[in-house]
Length: 493
Image 1 (cartoon, rainbow, N blue to C red):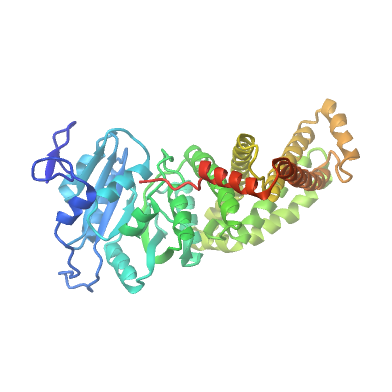
Image 2 (cartoon, rainbow, N blue to C red):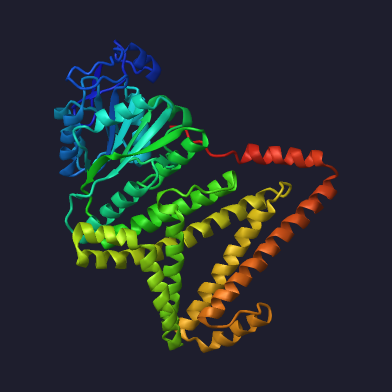
């Protein structure tokens, strides 16, 4: 059935019955024609048909190229569902000539919410999410359907950007090539999802609750969904042959804002939550050990370079640290060299170093937010049991980072008035001095002292409450109350 878009008069598909009234999605789907596994174009037959869901807001000219590439990849039972995430530049109006169904949302609420609406309106077994600023190859949907047909237990698949970005400026080339490299060398067993090029069984998507709608801008809603999928036991596969072309133009400002505030900071909070609930982190894609060591080497190199203006001999320490950074990143720098030549590789090395530094900043900001949330929850529940290890880690991280950053500030600025006060800390932290090395040693001691203080406070506090309240029965009752008031988040689509 069809209805008119109230704002434009364009014909828009809606789940309406014969009387023109809105019906439930399940009723609407049950009335639709069943999906046939046959292809009809001489291609290999698969039991899956695909609904391509594309959220769009300010799609621009590239959106038409996106629609054209998707339309060229459709099989006879496949479909395109465009979700206009609020009125913007009107790019969604281009969808009609490509046979797409359009779902119009009155207000912009983020790609996660838009994708959820698209899935509700989709008719097919498999949902393929595509961003409005990408183009896909003609065999993309066949590859997705064949992958699901070949692995019946598979719940979702993701792809990667290809090595030919649509924009020619350095940052756009660098950012997309880095994404291509990381995904192409990663394990095919994934623990995160990707909204720009990711397919999932519709039943599984609805089962886990869809994308979290609290992310009102493009952020980590796809990563968060991937963690919930893996926590629920669903398998996600990285299909390296599934590659799309990205046409977004990156600038310094847009890159830093997205990497620090839209992805790095909320991702850190998500990682702390995963560590709290699961007790471990998956070493997936950007989180493997080499990336972590590279980050530490980069931060240490920056500290020694800055401290060298006060103590020139510290510059000697920065040399081996930078060499360590280059060694840890030799594989990706070799890839950049082979793809774009020596000048591009040199620029990529600089931005790779910057990536480590602003990732550290994002981690610090996200960790601070997580600590504040933990302290607020601790204050609300006087009778809930406190996890000693978690509290110890939180207090230790805050103490270590606070001491390290404040000491670095004193060293760099040469603030004589503060120098004497900070020197007094050496009476409590034997290894601490107002120097770069002393700051590192003091930070480690501050972490140990903070961890011990937080853990001891939790132990004493838990024992006091337990004895005051009388028995373990009360403790179990308060824990049930805690879980009831603060359940693990599971957003509904």
